[in-house]
Image 1: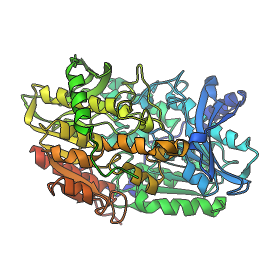
Image 2: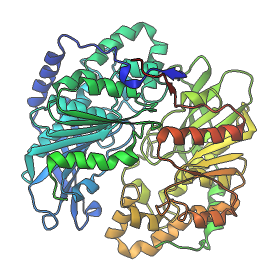
Image 3: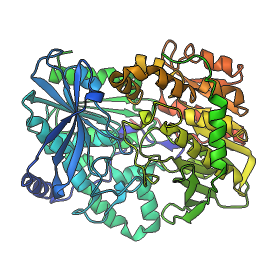
Image 4: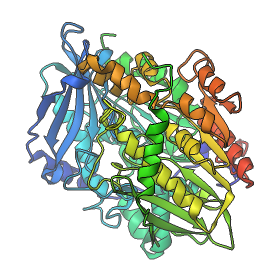
Length: 314
Length: 302
């Protein structure tokens, strides 16, 4: 870690926009659309409470992989439908939590488990560490190609639910969850009402790897230490998956929050994606905070920001 | 509800785990991983046998040079994945991060569920999954403490209750840094918090309320209060806000059990500040230079 850095907001980025970026993703979305969602729900009485029903869900995604998730819905006697939906995106090494607390506020909340996460890893399991660099020299088979689609198919899931008001769908997460928030809002701009992304990962990949030796970006440093001749191929692939290139496609209000001492997802990259955002936006930056991104103080602000646009019952 | 008395079976329970562990050779297998090896440290995958028998996994990094090096053990967090040793640690310590049974890389034949692991077999101390998981941590400690490149006078351990219990059962550690507590007053905590992973206790007891006493009895075997008298390492405990779970009042019974020997660190909730303070404490304990992860920022140019 360098002893002196320029202010994070002045750093910029070395990420560049591939000329065929939109076509690349349009082709993938078209391919995904040919695959029926086939959603299933299984009630989990053990995790349900007097206020909230908990379900394990599954749906089909790209490459016909079966993707798992948790779905939490207020009980009708507690809060009557329709409910705004909230997609909670997972971090890199964490398993998706059961979003019961969000359902208690009045959201129909999904905790998404994209491919490689437990319960979604029977056919694809690059491991941790491993996911970040799996097929990293080929954009057509890179890990996040399917991973991103798995996340945005959760939008299709909530849109299929009769208890959900499909005009109110939010997305939220931190770290990789922050990245998936940005990607989902960008790839489904007509569906997403609002997003809140903390310490966004997968933004300015190569800048981040140059700025830190913390995991998971250290996976890229390890890979390029062993295969330095592949640097340009890696950079070319990652440009297709970089949140900074997705950000201009977003039209909904977005909240970004960062720790100015974040060694995991450097704040320089948080500012770079914030600067690229297309819609109404705000950023909250916390000095001396690291990958927590000030969550001790920010959690209440995230709840208020989402509620402002999604209007949950509580 | 939580038992506020050490179970009669406590000592016999832990002695039996030690005895069972002693019956199995660890049969360590180290595999050099070129992908993670740097100019300053070699990096190994480590496989060890724990009770069951069960083969567990670790990432082990050793600095280049003469040594011996101070050793550092990170016990597993609650979750399916543990990060490999950090670059900063790898420059100063022989450092082992362990995957207990059920976690990725140690998930054959048993793959843990999240949520679910925290209450697996909790009806009895004998069937509780954490009996084996603690044995895994003890095995990892034995491995690190036995390595010729490790300075046995300077070995530290970092983690949650798993680190505290490991330090209590293996008194060779010089320093133990306990960043959080999951089993200490666990049922009282879960009644107040309601977030996962503690919510797993609530989920379990909602479905099986008649097991409350049995669950409390099981958890008492893992409660830091009852392990505290056995800890000889210098100890640092992170403390949450006043009046909160794991705040100073909440930890008071633990400090009584420790005889006031533990240092405390009041969390600021600024992750960078907290990291640097905690990391500097362990560096001082083991006689190496602290490494800050915060950096200075140049003044903005107009």
